[in-house]
Length: 410
Image: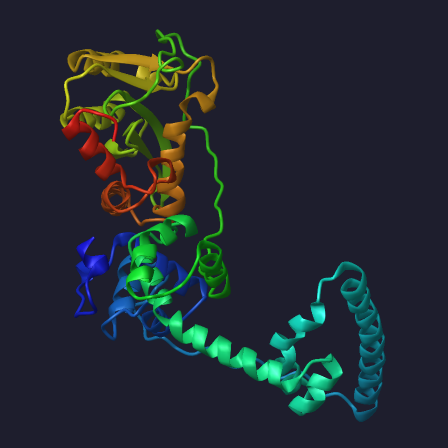
């Protein structure tokens, strides 16, 4: 967290996470911005830093000099007669549109008390410039006063000055968590707002994100990775009646897919159900039990208590395999599995999968090694920096450490 809170200083390549680099590379290659614009927007230091990322992580060939595209061929000009007819049609359409809109506004103001004409104040300058009118004329047409326009402009200008630091704060956090949601962003930034005297509520913060196009659109993907129709022994659901009130009481496990340029790879996760901390993970290019069990071994090594522990998973053949069950017995962990084929009985593990894929593993890596680096980095940020609504906006690492050290509910 020290990097996030540090003041501006000379940055190195280590200050930028793999997820952030891939986000910038993807935006440039899609044509959303040039690499120079990306450096300016995100405040990336170094004249060729983004170009270096493009050459290392990009899908296109960036070894050649960047050339400007040829200008498009201009359209044929209208004849005077065509222009007159077009303008006449537009004038008539505009006249009818204004009549209809004014009638609608009058009805809404008089019958529903919506005071829409007051909202014209924000549009007065735009209409004035667009139509080439004087401000007096524009205000008269809209039925408002010039004084109201001036007052609003002063308030807006003052508010913009007050909120000027907000975008930098948001972008600094988004360097580490590119798809962190608005509520969690607000929870992390609220103490800084208070310290700097910035008055900005949660709804106002969402309006600010929307205005500056900083809201995160949802991403939905689904590919089946569980093969539960097999002959191996399945275990009963033991957490249905459990009251989870301490760390390392229940571990939940699941497997999800992640694609790279080399093909489909698989991410196995073991998560503590109480603290939401990812205790173990493994990235592999296959679904064999020998690969999946590595995540369990890592989780077992990170245990801080010796209290009874359940391991809950779906009925996938990897979890029913002898190698996985023997590993559970070796660490004195009791197996538990979902009933039938209901994925919602393992919803917490599915949710952690979704968080990693929708907030961190956003861009396709070149190969398995690059994916492993990205996953390692993402898990560390998830555990130590990302707050959870279900944890009262605390991080999994914070909750887990407190619960295991005190031996009571955090």
